Amino acid sequence: MDIRLATLQDAESIAALNAEVQHVHADALPYLFKPPSEETFPAALVHQLLADPHTSIFIASVNGAPVGYIYAQILRRAETSLRYAWDRLYIHHIAVYPAYQRHGVGQALIQAVVRVAQAHGIATMALDVWTFNTQARAFFAAQGFTVYQETMWLPLDRQE
Image 1 (cartoon, one colour):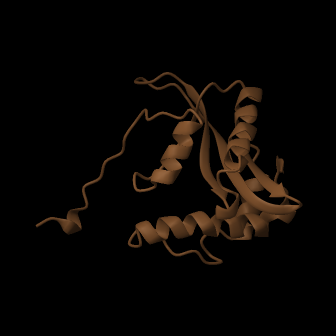
Image 2 (cartoon, helix red, strand yellow):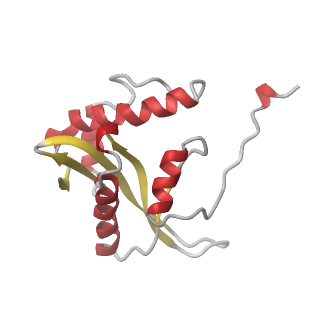
């Protein structure tokens, strides 16, 4: 397995890998997430993200074939009257083809962004995970992530 920073030449592969995770979300919450298509996470958007100096996208490959990616961004928040300044490395996406899950690919991708955070003196990483996604929640917990905040919603169109 090889983990490396993605390049512009990887944009199509990353877009295809994203379809895997988009499919999971669209199946679980079809009224919220669009089904995967060429428009949901296009290669052109990946190009834009790769140009952002605060963004890191790593790609995992096995025998030269892409099998997973992670997209993370450094977030810096200024101090306010209520909060101290803080920096986070925020993981926006991680996707691994099902055939390569539970083989260390996701863990290696997480470790790649841990090194980015450490290189920038960032002491905390964060991400969001949907409560329906028990597999992802278990994976992130196994990587040492813990819940520090919960978001709740009240769908008004479903109340009587």
